Image 1 (cartoon, rainbow, N blue to C red):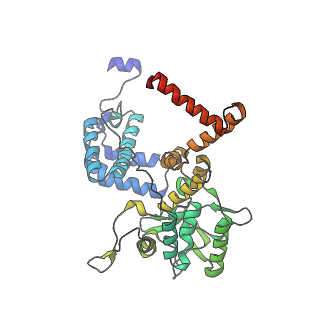
Image 2 (image 1 turned 45 degrees about the vertical axis):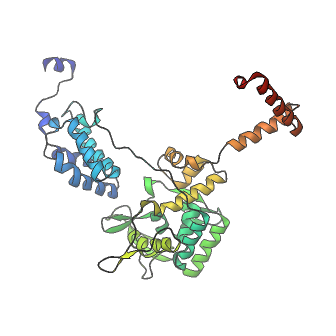
Image 3 (image 1 turned 30 degrees about the vertical axis):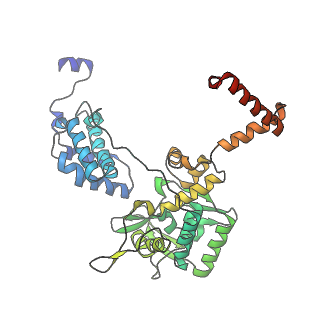
Length: 375
């Protein structure tokens, strides 16, 4: 202890007796997060971290215990929950290190294998499937999947679209807000990752938007901004329920989206539960994000580069867009073949059709004379 003190590395051995439950509120207070994220952190602490580590002194928490805890979370709840719970525990322990309560963060030990994000390859629906889904929507909501597949907006962003977000002169959609759920209430909030963005609007899409506004009009909706106690904002939304209320994802998914998927043949018909309500097959791959995948596929196929696509879709990291959609990029093989042939036609005397045939014939004879070792 005296040597550590002389080196400036001394830690009070009593400092580590602080319980993790005392550090948790300090960690939350040190973070600037949106209300939805705060709710998620609180839930993961209460359900997964506190029951196991809350009453423990921080200096007593071992890497092996964290590793075993993560393994159990992965087996019972899956990688998404395990990642979120680990973020909370790791954050609290990092704060303990910063406050010099412990020397090292046990969650960062090599034995602790952090849950990774394993994404399966995106499957893009066929044009016919998208068309059937659009046709299966009630007319007043048909524009939702049209915009989703033609501009790549997220569900909450679609629900929050206002007439003021469409710039018909510049032919763009300005994605400025989403409708977001906080517990059992709703707010207007910035799009995911707190970033507004601009998405090109094709002439056909622009005509569809104008037609929708002319036929169904808009409805002024008032909601707090970013927080339940935030300033009230009013926007003339394109999509509302018949009673004039804003759309909610849970109701829309059951009442409109999944019904359309059944008609389109994407989902089987639902069965009735004990209360007589429809119960659809659970499938995480058939949510409205499938419309974003379709948008990504058609733009990449027609030459939009991955950087531009990332700006239109709006992820925090453009590398995520590349990782998710790289398999949808057109093959460069044909472009490379054409480029080489165009150049050889200019610089090589045998680059004509006749010359290529003669070259292939000469190669055949050479292989026959020299044997396969030539190649």
